[in-house]
Image (cartoon, rainbow, N blue to C red; front, side, top):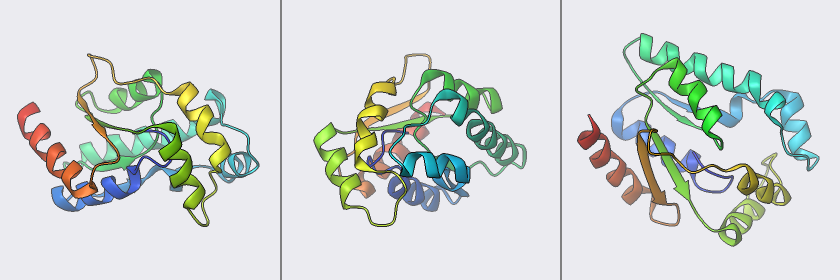
Amino acid sequence: MGVSGSGKSTVGRLLAQRLMVPFLEGDDVHSAANRAKMASGHPLDDEDRRPWLRSLAAWIREAVGNGRGGVVACSALKHEYRDAFRGADPDVWFLCLTLDRATADRRVAARAGHFMPARLVDSQYAALEPLRPDEPGLTVDATADPRAIVDEVVLALRESR
């Protein structure tokens, strides 16, 4: 989880490979309307996100129900969004990738072919709610090497289980 440009997809793919579990890119689950809204420079609101969150929660429920687990890369900016995932499985574990706005702006502006424009980064920071003590997970500096982040996550997962 984290704002756009925090490295969720990169770290998520690496983590899924390391854990040998399926990976879901949350951006791929957005509706065409949500993608168009963001591409036009308008942030999503909670109503826009509701079907997306339901789809992600259903994927989590299925992955856990099949006994395989998985890694989902998505913003999960608000506590209530993460609660939807915990409703799908109470053992969901969160990785929060943090970075400063200037770095997020620079990373998003440098991406080619992505529907999320850099001007929406501020809206993500406005919505972002850090992990709470009741949410199992880890918060790490997203400017660290992605492989080092995965190493840290694997250690934290072992300790938490």
